[in-house]
Image 1: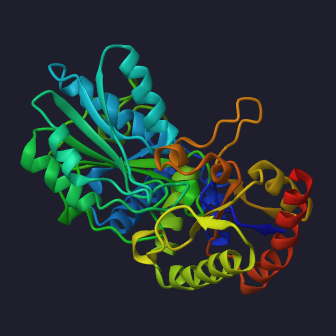
Image 2 (image 1 turned 180 degrees about the vertical axis):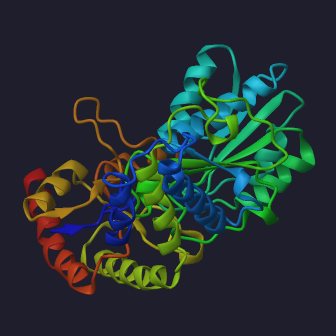
Amino acid sequence: MIYFDNNATTRIAPEVFDAMKPFLTDFYGNASSAYDFSRESKKAISRARESIAALLGANSTDEIIFTSCGTESDNWAILGALEANPEKNHIVTTKVEHEAVRSLCKKLEKKGFRITWLEVDENGFLDSERLKNSLNEKTAIVSVMAANNETGILFPVEKLAEIVKENSGALFHVDGVNAVGKIPFNLKKTEIDLFSVSGHKFHAPKGIGALYIKENIKLPSHFIGGGQESGKRAGTEAVHQIAGIGKAAEIVQDFEQMKRVSILRNRLENEILNKIPNSRLNGTKDYEKRLPNTANISFENTNGEAILARLSDLKIYVSTGSACNAESHRTSAVLQAMNIPFSDAMGAIRLSLGRYNTEAEVARVLEVLPPIIAEIRGFAE
């Protein structure tokens, strides 16, 4: 099997699995209980909070609140900002956000909130001047992703946060889900107020995430119940999941591994573009402005779902960059926002590598992909 879909999810690291097991077997006590049997659970949660704080460059462990996933973190950040500022009804975000932000903002728009949808250019980049001009006294929150999950394009969130703070009283939220563990962060040196994390994107289990809440920000509780997470997020702690994300955070602080991944990605991307006629990269060719693991490539006059199916037959797993709908012939909202031509967007795939991928796997994909594209194009003629 060759797995090149690490932006969708990642395998649990063996060390992470080992860190989780004791809390599913021996140390199963409720971390909120007062007796000695819960001590190990409490320690595991504290260690994990320290690891996440270190990974993000937070100023304090008190700024890290565990959630169930990135979607919950995104929703809590936006809805919490609105609840904390009921006199404000304006949100600024982009047309290329993950559905966790985009779909929520569409729902809020139907409820009467004003949403400014910032556009991107053909390479997927934002115009910071447009962000500045969109801000006003009614802006409650600006929500921008750190890295696009489809193209890997990096947004300069530190700079954007400064623009927001210099020109408004809005909170600034970053969806960091697809960036954490791939590029370093040092949040204490930024104006970022809220930052979302999802463990399964960096070799932790599914079902665990975190929300960084800057120490001076008062965000209303998202769940109502007990006093867990310093009273900020009710619900019995999933200790085994928390132990897992903590261990994963320790592992991925070694960014030397991502340099190796970037070399593999660069070879894969460049040889595909050189070997396969009428292929194009969706996004900038500047490696410094993209995640080190992601390539979104279109093959003109093909179909992404067909490419995915052929590769899947060979136990090679990628994703369609376009999330095509065969009946409506709709392409990805991200590629639409970048004005990628329909004939290209329908034939887009995303290859996202991870820390466990190898040179041999890259070579195998480069061997089988050109004839697959030729075959699909042959059927279309």
